[in-house]
Image 1 (spheres, helix red, strand yellow):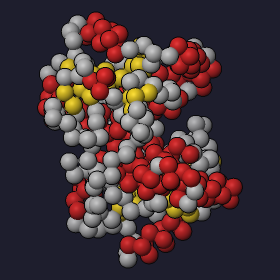
Image 2 (cartoon, rainbow over the protein chains, first blue to last red):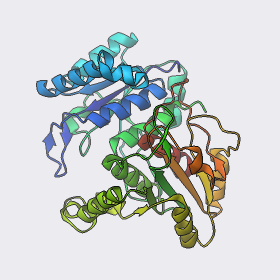
Image 3 (spheres, chains in turn yellow, brown):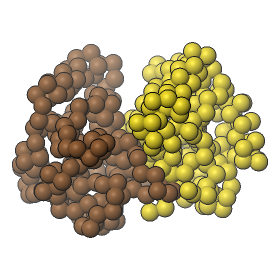
Image 4 (tube, chains in turn orange, yellow):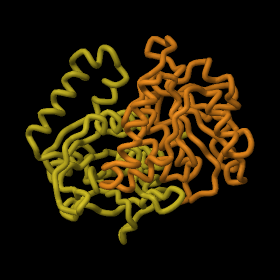
Length: 187
Length: 187
């Protein structure tokens, strides 16, 4: 287990749809499983799902019940172990309260973006901060990305992930894996 | 577009199930989308699906038809662009023939494994080989990983992806993203 104090949040509201309208997106089963497994692999402390919708919160509660207390976790204990990281919060204000309480101070809040942003801290910089024991958290946007209203508590952006050209349509699940590897890999 | 001559193959047979029996796995819609998008981001040349089952090959053909010629690609051109990389082959022998023909020589064939293997080449080594213009391809296993019969044409293994401890249950979609970032990222 890494000593890094890193939390990750997947934001379902407020985000953009493909026409850059502000929407709330549906929670996706596979986002939860994939990001939880990656988070567990890299020693992330908690994986938060941010959604204001009670039906969506209920869906997640049922999924977690199946894996943490029911048949799922008996058949696949590794999956159960990953899903113990998952927490649901209704909004970003609650997210910041919870994480600040858990970490004993307000974490550095980092947003991700597929585009260059003015306030950017590079991966090496954040990696050093984490190694020095300072808490940080990463906001990941679903759908077409975090809307401006999601950015009021954000301290800085991580750089966009550059592949080999201008194509920047990584799935959020893959982006999360790459970010965590860049910040926390020990190998 | 990177100059790297890298192809990626997702192997559905022969792989292990959770009891380490050799099986053929079902093609998963989301594996195709996620790995194609990541492959396109990093300038991978082709993304091969290896499955001997005609019904599975037919499923992939229908999915590609929808995205490359039908409504899907009109609504989401970026997705269409990623899925142009996808090819289906029935077995590994056909895979090696095709890739060797496309690249003009047999590529270095690299397998992935969640465990340490005797014949391992590190990421920096393969990264340098790709930068020097030499072709390589990566075999990714579905289900519980590549069975021994899938390894007869393999030249070496990539190192297991180390996170922050002993937990090594990354989704293949996330492992693919991390591997490609380590081998091909330019940022």
